[in-house]
Image 1 (cartoon, rainbow, N blue to C red):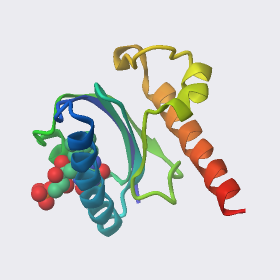
Image 2: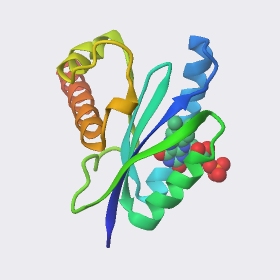
Image 3: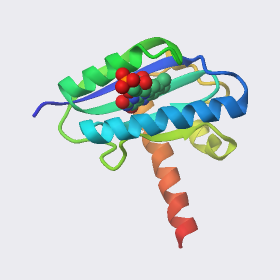
Image 4: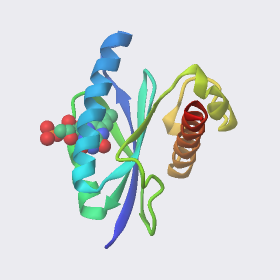
Length: 149
Ligand SMILES: Cc1cc2nc3c(=O)[nH]c(=O)nc-3n(C[C@H](O)[C@H](O)[C@H](O)COP(=O)(O)O)c2cc1C
């Protein structure tokens, strides 16, 4: 089975009000996780007030269909494909859609990636977005482990 990994970014057009954004994002993630679970799609969603960066992985036709659906969603705009490549293994096998809303807790990771101010996705390629997502996921996993201990 041919597996693919797709990376895109888009402009976040959700209500600028913090509470409104969170409600919308919860809704998006709830549906995304359910649908991705059914479709065997995994990945990661990074977002701040301005942008979404998302990685989708799974069977090629399914990932492309999911991407087309997402690209037509009115809750974001200027959806831009950054990279798509064939993969032998998933990077986010445990996550139907992991997510990280940028917060002060993540700044060390952003700084390690040379991002000190706002995210400028036009300066990132697929490999950089993948590496940022992997590090955010690992940070989250370490924190969860510590709080469970
Ligand atoms: C930033 C963003 C990320 C999304 N990620 C996913 C996703 O990973 N999987 C998914 O099925 N839908 C995702 N969605 C939601 C889809 O756009 C769509 O609303 C949802 O799949 C329901 O589609 P339907 O109403 O045609 O069934 C995302 C939407 C946005 C705005």
